[in-house]
Length: 516
Image (cartoon, rainbow, N blue to C red; front, side, top):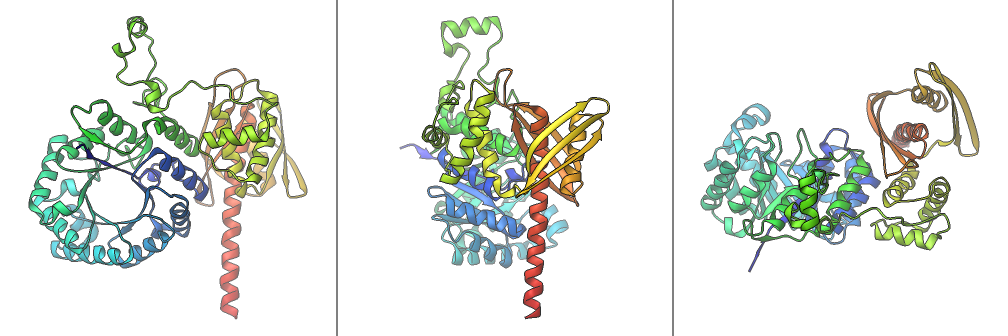
């Protein structure tokens, strides 16, 4: 009987810590639903103690996901564990993931704890977590730089306290395949009760070895791999889900394990994450990159014509890569649009379908061909309606150096208009937006790329803007790249305004409670 390797996806937690990849509640829920369709066993939704927004996002994901187990991270502290358990209350299959560092450098300089204190805290944390949530994972942070005998000790303590999963992570991407394989073998052999739990491997890619280390850990006895879509994560990223899954799939002779991932959902998941975060997938990225199944060399092309297996070890279809097809036209109805959205994995309300249809018709009037990726960007715009304080009505640019921009926005029933001069059309437009909305920000990152092929392609604009010391990601899409840029900047400004207004309302409620 083939053994199973569980896939623990941490795109929404560790992956979100990748610079520029932060997600709001709605974005996390959308990506969580895609991950559930992908077939991951566990979906780590976040770190609830970090902020109220993070707590709310984890709770929403826990309520939305119906198949996968939803996990929440907590330090080995009572307040963290209780907060995580609270956030997981709506989950059908919750997992509480608690951790404490076990390497000498972390214990001495970060925790300022002795080995015995770490053992005591690990046992207490797992015991408390087990009282609150039925499934508990314990992680020994920086395991690969820890003493192996001490790792076996802390593992035994966690198992005795009730842990169901033991994770031995390569937190800083330091280890090698041979080392991590032997580390798992040593701990499993020397920790009493190891036969009662699942061992998990979590690897960072600082030396480019994350996937190799994950597979080596499986050879050493791990039966859960923690990974992220597109390999995103802190610093150089995490184990790439698509790479490790397809390695086991293609080289089943070497890694004879099964996993529940639906491989045909890999490219859709990769695409969804790229659209939601604005982080482009490198062209040469294995499995999901644009060039992964491209063949330019004449020799390669000749071989492909003769037999695809000459230069392809898997088919594009096996990972969900299909040629973009014309899906809908300007004469299509709401029902067809809603059906196609459902096929792409979007669950939309009647109101959202109505809003989407209006945007779709406007785009279809400008483009002869509307592709799936166009539709994804339109859906993303509709799902950000909750942040839409100001709506863009008109952009008019004149001149070039200097350029002048006239911007018309609407807030409720009020139409607002202003002009500004800038170094170029985008700079001028951003300045005009700032004058109207009354907030000024610093542009940290600006990127434009085409969503689909053709001269009339929908352009995607992504920005990161700092307002009052806080960074906000904005995105926009239009067949006009200046308009797409303005939509992205306005989206970031709207998020800042919504945040400020929510803070003011919370302050008013606190003051009112204090007076009563």
